[in-house]
Picture (cartoon, one colour):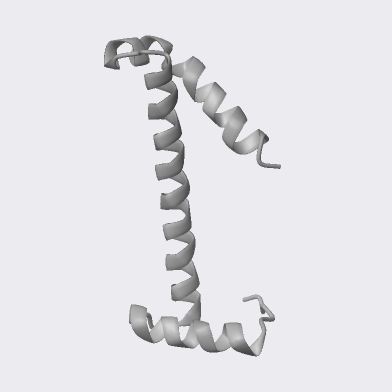
Length: 83
């Protein structure tokens, strides 16, 4: 186990959110929040992928053949460009 120090206000927010989300522990709540964050990032990356494909005028067949290139561009823009 590890400890995390948070402000009193953040602690109150976590306790309230824990009740709203009906989680049994703060650890479970934080785990749920991390999962939701990952889902949101994946959704955003998926939207970027679709936008790039549309910009290039690619259909599903094209994406299957050229998808690797688009994925690389999205990855570079999303992960390497956000540092």
